[in-house]
Amino acid sequence: MNSRPVIKRFTIVILVLAMAGIAGWALLQGKRDPGAETAAPAAAHRVAILNGVTVVALDAATQAQSGIRTELLAAANYQPETVTYGSVLDLQPLLDLRARYFSAQADAGTARAMVAASRQEYERSRLLYQDNKNVSLKTYQAARAAYLSDQARADAAALAAQSIQAAVRQQFGATLGRWALDPRSSEGARLLDRKEVVVRVTVPPGAGSAVPARIQITANDNRRLPAYLVSPSPQSDPAIQGSAFIYRVTAPIAAGTTIVAYLPTAGHTTRGTCIPAGAVVWYGGQPWAYLQMGSDHFGRYPLAQKASMPGGFFVAQGFKAGERVVVGGAQLLLSEELRPQGGGSAGSQDPDGD
Image (tube, rainbow, N blue to C red; front, side, top):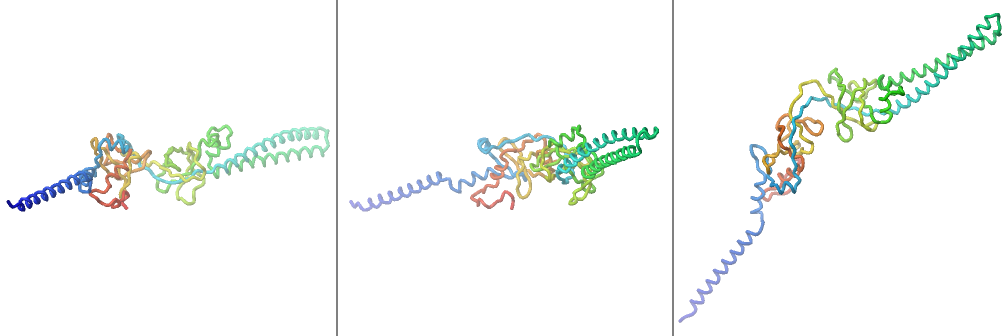
C-alpha cells in the first residue's frame, strides 16, 4: 500500500488546523485590545444633541468622582441699572482742615476771653476818667487801645475759623464738613476710625434727575457693597463727564481706589432667575450653564441677555426657578463634551472657541 497519499492528506489537515488556530488567536486578541474601533462607540454615547441642546451623559459614579454638584434655581427680580465709575476719596486733607479748625477755634476762644477782660478794664477807666478825671487821659487811652486790639485779634481768629469751614465745604460739601468739624458727630467718628469711607460717584448726563439714595459699588474683589448718599459733591472728576455725588460705604477700601457704581434706574422690574457665578462656563465667547436633565444627563444652555447681579447673572429666559443647575464641576462637563470622539485630535476644539 502506497503511504504517500496518506501523508499528504495528513499534512493538509495539520496546516488547516494551524491556520484556524492562528485566526482564532487573532480574533481573541482583537476582543481584548481596547483599540480605536471599540473605544469610539463607547465614547460617542456620552455626548448627544437633543432638540438643538448639547447633552452630556455621566453615570452616578463618574459624577461623584468629578465633583458634580447642582443647586435649585430661585426666582429673582431685576431692576435696570446704570453703570458708572468713581473713586474712594482721600480724607487726609479733611483731617488736616479739621485740626486747623479746632486750633483756630481755640485761638478764637482765647481771644474772646482777652476781649472780655480788656473791655472791663476799658469801661472802668472810661467811667473814672469821666468822673472828675480820677484817672489820667493816658491810662484811659491805653485801656481803650488794649480793648480794641484784643477785639481785632478775636475778629481775626473767628474769621480764620470761618475760612476753614468754607474750605471744607468747597472741597467736601456741607454735610461731610459738618460731620468732620463736629467733635460729637457719630458719623464723623466712623470716618475717623475708617469704619466707613466716602466715594465720589459721577452720574453720567441723561441718567435721570433723581439721584438714588442707595446704590451698590464694587471695588477690588468685585463684591457688591451698599453705598448711601451723603450729598452732592462740590468737586468732580475732570476725566468723567457728569454730576458728582458723595456716598458713604461701610468698608475699609483704600483711598484712591477706582470703584464701579451701579445706580438703579426707573423702569419696570423684570422677573427671572439668578444663575450663580460658579455655574457659568465660557465657550465660543459666550456664557453657558448646564441644567440637569434626569439623573445622569446635563444640557448646556446659553445665558442670553444676561445682566450682572450680586452672586451671579440675571436671566429672564432659558432658565426657570426650580430647575437644577450645575454649580460644581461645570467646567469638567464642558471638557467631557469637547473631548475628541472617534479618535479625533485632542487639540481639535478650543473650550473658548478661539
